[in-house]
Image (cartoon, rainbow, N blue to C red; front, side):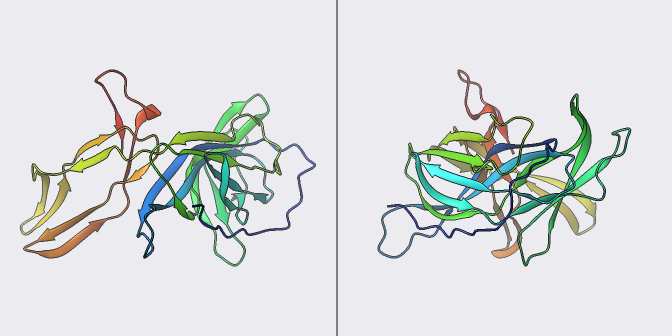
Length: 245
């Protein structure tokens, strides 16, 4: 069963100039959502992740198509990206910023660095940027996800060959804190930073949420909804793996 997806259309022209811009997908964050009543499928929200480098001060469409097993299941055709704050200085030595937004909403600001990536000059590079989720996508183990950034080629790019990424969904992941271990950093009497220690087993090519709740005497005291994990490089070599979190 393929979930229906809302498609937003934004009237933006193709660019006739040749800006020095590149969009490159980094991955996808996949988070399971509650199963609808009566359904036996597993549904997920999927956040595209993309790196951006640009020296173009104009507004540019930041669109994405998501395919599962070569079937288009969701689109983002509403978002816009723009270099902010005048871009990079002549010496290309500074921090920089790009803004991402959709009509009617305030921009989300992403910091980056000015770098010289091509002979044509300096660009602001930032990422990975986590785009808005494509929601309610049914997945089964073995499904192949394909993310395409700028699918209509509205933005001329330095490299037009790196706009797609493929990942295979699997559910062979396990988080365990059975040891009950924590790092304690005492700040002052009665006040401490507490860091959970988690055992992670995964071969997922996708980014997964790594969330935690902390209870003290049975009362919810703190939550962590920020962190994620994925296998570095998307695979293991022999008996050795590295996880990014």
